[in-house]
Length: 294
Image (tube, rainbow, N blue to C red; front, side, top):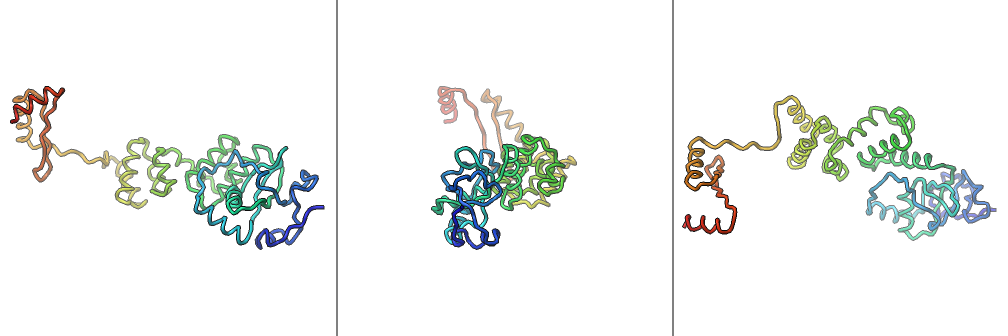
């Protein structure tokens, strides 16, 4: 006979889900037979999902969830599968981490049968459905489903309930330079900015646009317009071009080069401010230049 668990321990939300049915304990004999039920499992018996597609967990969000769990308990059970020595986590890693932080010894869990492929697919699908998942994590999850589960985009569309075009748009983000992908993950630019940059094949040029977006705080619409100009050949680069020296300054640069026997470089801005660069190849040569200048 399974042990009865007080409703207060689980929180009001879970009690409502269960319609006040009795919850079984994983410590009872014959726990392997409770597939399809919700049971209370010791945290120490749960092994994290090695297929977890989520790579970043917000520490502050975990702490907030832990505080909520202390007050209300775990409102939604995690999902696990039975193994020889305990349980493998399928989904609910945030709840598991927060429960440990809250000091709980056990957690309610739904037990189900799943092989490694199904375990990976469930973890991927659950994460894709999360609203707080960043676009690159979603894209990586879709790519994992293609690579590891041999699914087509049409298959994924049916499984995750998203349009095929939406899936394609996410996957295309992975064509961006890794620095730009990190910028999307960290919130420096949006997915819309990223989509605008995908049409630029050169990663070097992509990074030029990325730096300008961040520096000038460009909107997605402004970025799209700038990319369109680039693709139409109206702008060749975002890097400022050096203004050619006036002919009289060029002549002066040549005269100085002939006088010193070295390639003298003169640079000057629109206001007439500039500098003269005299190269040297050794400390002795520098001493000689010093004497000539003095």
